[in-house]
Length: 483
Image (cartoon, rainbow, N blue to C red; front, top):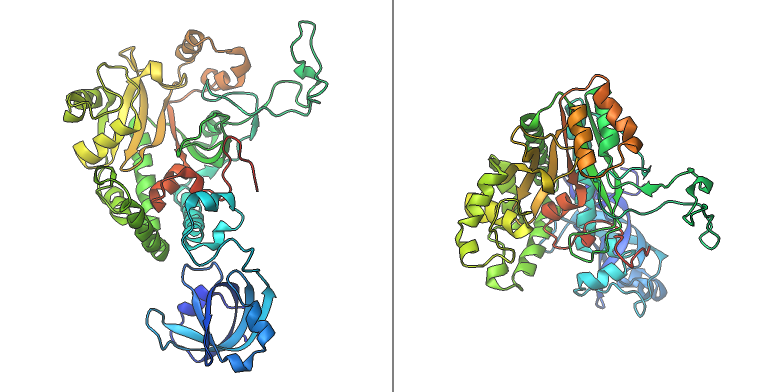
């Protein structure tokens, strides 16, 4: 092992034996000293674990030691030895310490104390240096890798769908407009409307809310594809579940019916959760303890019955229960929660749009297993979903998880040209502008299906965090586009 080359702390802690000279570089988490020894906890982000640096204060000049404060960055060369203290395998006996960057303790906002998540959101540029957020970002990387690994191993092709689009995939919802027009001198048509012919794309353009429609186009040529990209919703919502910018995983598969779609989604979710359990053990152990501490501050009735790792194993180890929306409505309507008015939104009639509390009841109280609901009323679902023979429902599916409710939404897509265009007319949609989408139903149409998994929803589940702003590095929400 080269003495000059930096060795990551993660690699050092995995060495079989000590008594080697190494160079480590990282940021000071804590420092304490007495006359005989100085102790520095160093972290370089490669692992949640720190490496303890031990030094003889008489070997270093006072000016250098004074600069070693929480947040300062160091390069340390020393001999790795078996640790004298408990809780760590090795420690580094420092021979040289170079301060690469100072952090004034009067001004550096991350001191060795407990900071609230709200405060850390205000300093999102520094929060990755905390244990909580470094753990989340490492898990996030692992989940990104696992998504690509899963689909690659199944022979799917990754497609980059447009970020700038002229269509609204969901048929509803606020979108962010993309324009190069001078907002102070907007060109107008004769009837006083903005003349988008003068704009860059010569038409209205927006940031995408979904890659699904373009995904369908490529699936009807390559058979099995998936997108994994940023999506945008200009919804003025300040809840713990909403972001203006987030990432979506959207597979689309030719020749898949609803059953095939459910099978793939269940297999994918189990694969991702199992991957996290096997490959993120240290970070998940830390996040589980963090979640337990957070739970302990809640009222008893608000606490989760399962710990973080138990929730993950709950998904990995259980077959998902499959039932129709109609069956779910009957269960909910006849439940004690509904009869005793414990639900905020009471269920009294078929056609109700299920809320998170209803979804969680089915998973956590009734079945005690993950649930897939199918065959929803067509009035509460999107225009592109396959219409069932009953004339009332569509071949939709939602997957419900403990603690979170819906995590996946999908459907078999309507491949019949006449049925699709009639549904678009019912919803007063502009079929002309969707000519390219309708072409796939005119030329060699096939049964096909797909679903969407909001990546940050998955991250909430895997990390046990309760606010979606804490599972993305730099959250974009109403009034917040900092960093």
